[in-house]
Image 1 (cartoon, chains in turn orange, yellow):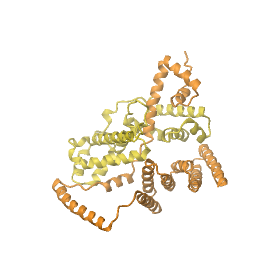
Image 2 (cartoon, rainbow over the protein chains, first blue to last red):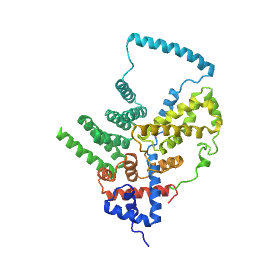
Image 3 (cartoon, rainbow over the protein chains, first blue to last red):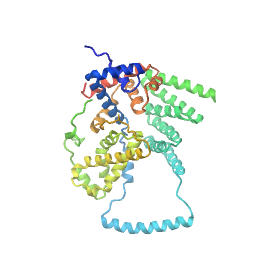
Image 4 (cartoon, rainbow over the protein chains, first blue to last red):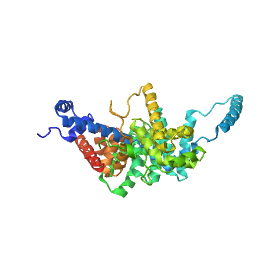
Length: 228
Length: 190
């Protein structure tokens, strides 16, 4: 007997995207149909693996260089002991100096600004992959801290991706900034840059997908300009 | 995309296809402070470490996973003296990564963000399959990759995907299902 549940419906059921009535019917069918239960279970395992595969970072040469540069010095144990004593002196001296100067370390805001500025400098120097990596890390750290400036970092990431020639990634970043930013100026900049990225992508692929996305962004940009 | 036994081929040399050759030598050189040798170890193992961390269900996207990979290798560098079998560096650093991912998830749970990026109650996916899947997704046609990206990378629901792609929600399901079928074919699991 043919199964009354189409595979696409099971797909939508698994994602919770069906209306209540059809969802209840499928839930009831699943109690009877072992094949559909097995397929649903398989889809869910695949979803977990897909989600994980989309969070795999690029293992780039820049990431490797960054790691190698940040490795602590490797020494034999007696060298560590000597270094420990020296470090204790240095620490004491630094603490005294800090107390005398009555200064504290840079605030998180300063650090963020400094990292954003460094990424911008790296981008200006023509190293977009490295800049993208820094922007990405800053965006991630700020997003975890619920800091709205993560969208500024994401905008930088989009520019770096564009400079790399990765127009799809550039658009994805700009689209997110355009959708989420409450700063109208930043949103308009992101929409404009997103349209440019899609233009460049259209030249590469001539795809329908890019054309539609570009039209959507152009509509949004018109609305944003009118409302401003 | 059913699970396969990847145990035997987990730590093969990507260049020769045989058991990891030269890893012991790279570990010995790293122990004596050779950073470039450690960089080579990173090149060989970082993707699998990333897959293990991602498979644990860490939230925060590729950036959060990349930070944990970096941390895992720094920890490995500091503790190289404790590695007994030099040839098993890959498995060892993967375990360090998995432990860091577990601690990261526990910290999230304490902050109230208890959910992982996985379905409730499910076992973590096999890291080797996660890597294979990432490669397979990369070879899909643009239209399939776009719908998968919106669903699994950006975590959007059907309604938002439909609006972004200017299609109906039914079409979202159809495209996702086609992409899933294609991936199964590519991985020889149809």
